[in-house]
Length: 159
Image (cartoon, rainbow, N blue to C red; front, side, top):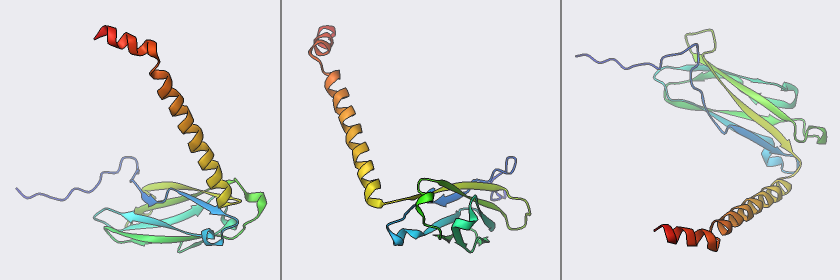
C-alpha cells in the first residue's frame, strides 16, 4: 500500500507553536540583557509564516517582526528593550507569535511569551537564593518530622 505523510490536523486552528525561551527577563543594570533572541521552530513538513505582536510596542524593537520559516528549520527573532526606566520595573509585557501555513491568511496557531524588566540581576539572584534556601529548610523540616521516633516504632510494629 502507498503510505502518505500525515500533516498535523488543525483543530479549530490550533497549530502548536514551538518557541524558546518562553520568558524574557531584562535587567536594567545589565545592558547585555537589553537585546534578547527568541527562536521559533518549525518541525512541520510545510513552511510557516509568522508575525510578532506586542502589548507595548513603544517599549521594544522587534527585528524582523514578520517572516517565514522553512520546513524543519528555525528562525531567530531579535527583541530589544528600548525604554529601560524604573517606572517599568516588574511590569509584565507580552509578545504573541502568530503562525500559519504559508498559503493561509488566517493564523493557525499562537504562543505568548512574557517579558519583564527587573532592576538588577544581582537582586534577582539574591531573591532566588533566599527562595531556594527557604524551600530547602521546608524540605528539611518535612524530612525530620517524617522520621519521629513514634512513626518509626509504628512502622516496626506493623512489619
